[in-house]
Length: 238
Image (cartoon, rainbow, N blue to C red; front, side, top):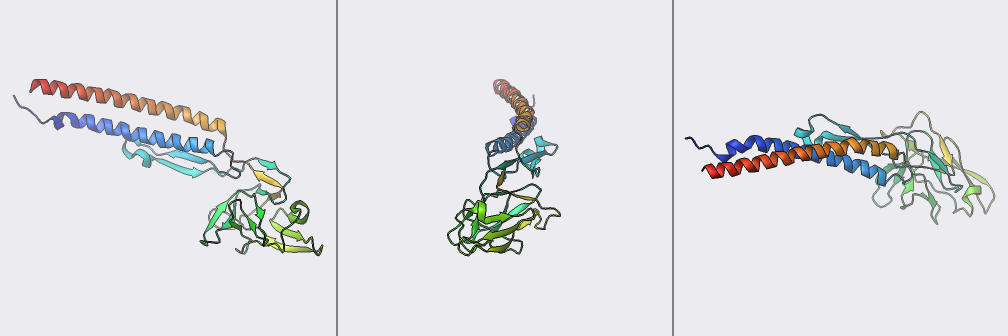
């Protein structure tokens, strides 16, 4: 009677079990992205991550899960705050980190005016104008709703509380994700943009993803139990 190494019997089970594990990790990654969208749905200007699943998740695992930004415009909400502005079209505002010089893109137009007149984000980054320079007002406004005017094209006009004169400050720097000026820009002052997450869509996508994970988990369990029984039988035979 020929006795073959245990690995010869278990290799096919190993391959099946590893395939199930890779598929489950892909499902978990998918769920992580969906729950991340839901958790950040309340952030102004947040853009949901849409999941694109490549075939052969049992081979590629997490690499089969790719994402792309959902560029749909969220609902605009009126705030009555003069420093707030939102984009009713696709595109992004530009922010400069004065410490690192790094430029990032955002759709969150909740600004605040620093003591020295710079228009900054909630975390202190500088909004840039169309020329790539930090936007700076001559003074910090006492009432931005009355002194600050932002037109649809992003042009900023400021009325000094000291001199009473109007002054053109510049134009908000709005770009595409490729860094180019969009064909159309529609800036709405005294508004913020809600995150574009559609909660119902996220939960509807979670249902089949969870079912796929449960199915792969069950397959893994069956394969594991079968392998264990086979090894026990081989042990007794020897």
